[in-house]
Image 1 (cartoon, one colour):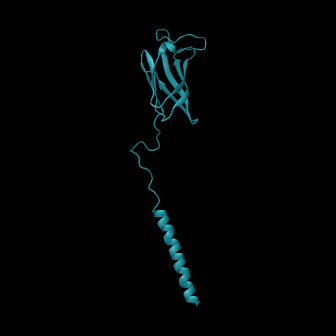
Image 2 (cartoon, one colour):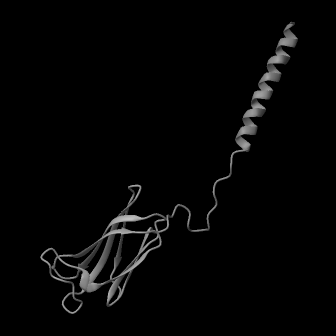
Image 3 (cartoon, rainbow, N blue to C red):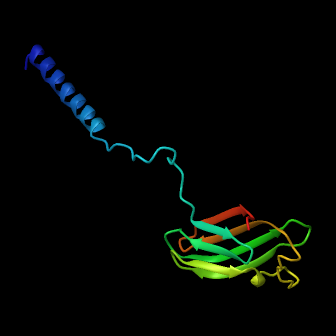
Length: 139
């Protein structure tokens, strides 16, 4: 093999390798597009609504959630009032009466005696991911 032929083979191999590299980079899948203002925002796994008579909790996690702890924090120095729900299926909506919430000493929550400041819901889905949401009380 002559020197000029060797150079042309090396140049051809380099050209082919470079074109493969460019082809591989250009055929990469485009990034996922999302509506404006929602990029990187995960939808809420748990929805919470409050009213004068109940707390409504909805599971939007896409899978069942377990050990759901719902806490009502009053405005005063009173201890928080809690309720535990063992399991909620996907899409399940629970309407929980305020009288079902209890403090550590067994006192039931009454909107006549206590003014609620916020409600917090914590849960774990069946794959172990923790979810938490805190919302101000809006009757």
